[in-house]
Length: 159
Image (tube, rainbow, N blue to C red):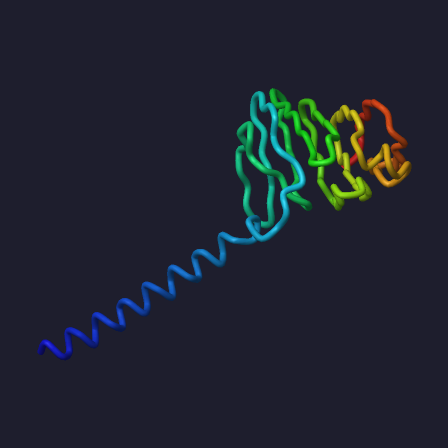
């Protein structure tokens, strides 16, 4: 009886260990990516869609390439990227952080943000300063090549 108990206990331990490893592996995709930005401010209802999940961001939380930010009618968000680009999205906006790479040793990189709807205010950072045209904002009607500036874009009537 004691021997059977030991065998069952070992099997249970192996199963629990395996389940724990699978749970950690499934939670790891965001951790395996490099952080590209950080949430600075949030007001109202805002969601970050990442993979098949969705979260309500809080100031200080990281953002990653391919994240999509969705603000509701009362929502807005402020974001600072690792190249010091600052963005803010107003109410009823949907913005995808489609592509981002940045080398802090030489300040080179590229960035593509998709403004699917709503408003986006931008103060460009090191990517646009060091490589004019390497920062782009795509809207349903056009793609803006940013050359180091401040601007506001609005996308309406599409979807």
